[in-house]
Image 1: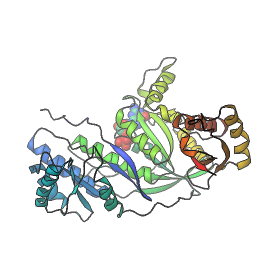
Image 2: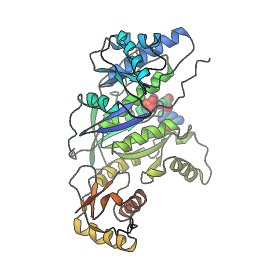
Image 3: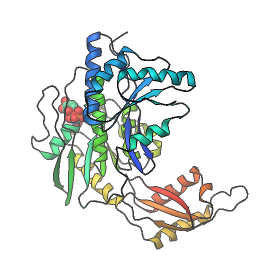
Image 4: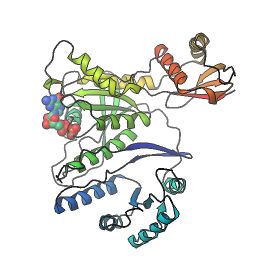
Length: 405
Ligand code: GDP
């Protein structure tokens, strides 16, 4: 076994909606590394990171394997936190395995929640319990000054960008092991626009375990995403867009945030005539569902196009605040719908009669029709694309919902 095993494993991220509440979730990867010493460090650091950053912790154990020494090690650390920890006994898919869940009482972490992730059984009770920790979703209001945050994997240039923009030392953190700081929001003014830069990028945590640095940065990204109106997602040109980058981008999208993709360190790339075009195609092929997101090639080192990124981010925010008059919306969209109506369902003729933008912060459009349930994804996509043709929603996630009159 080498020290790298498990290190490149993909994490899973998601946005969960349960009843009238929602929250972001991330798995810690549960990896295995070589030496005893690194192993201990890894556990300690990853648990420490989770404890610092998460609001709720799900500690997942396995009913088929049963209680392990590793579980006991984790439990020891987890028992010290005052954050809510839920003990989840996974793979409890029959009564025999359910019995196994009883042995987890030994961990002294309360009642285990038996679930079977594959069938979903038990997850309802778990979610009911977990969401008691979260507030009910409230409709956000668009702030006067957009909050912009810089997100991305470690080493892509986040702090360099923030430093360049702030042009002072605020985002530099001393290189002491375990140094953490709360995010500092800085007010910034450029191009006649004001914006708040939510400065989580400069926060660093020294670790001996590379996996933990990645984990930590993802946790920070989630916070940065939650606090932002528009996310500037940095990708390292010298590495290209990797699965982890796509994960972070998807997370911003699922949280309905405005997005600008900044391909940084462009100075390191040897260029020919079509290099940028080919690079952009390559990136777009990995996020085909986000074809509306602007991509800008930059170098923080030479300051190339950095200002353009910030300008674009403000523009995306303006797009996000767009309110389209109902008359205009119906005028252009009903004509398109007439030319290409939704396919009928079991001989039922589906008619969209009226469209209106809801007064929500995230642009949402209600299409009133006779059989809302029978409008399928391809037609929804057609409508979204038409909306984007007529109205400026570059970088903005829009929602189309179908309702009966
Ligand atoms: P962070 O971990 O995302 O905050 O990344 P940093 O801002 O710390 O940058 C990581 C490394 O990349 C540092 O050594 C930077 O000097 C370097 N770097 C950042 N931007 C650029 C760039 O545009 N070009 C080059 N060549 N290096 C850069």
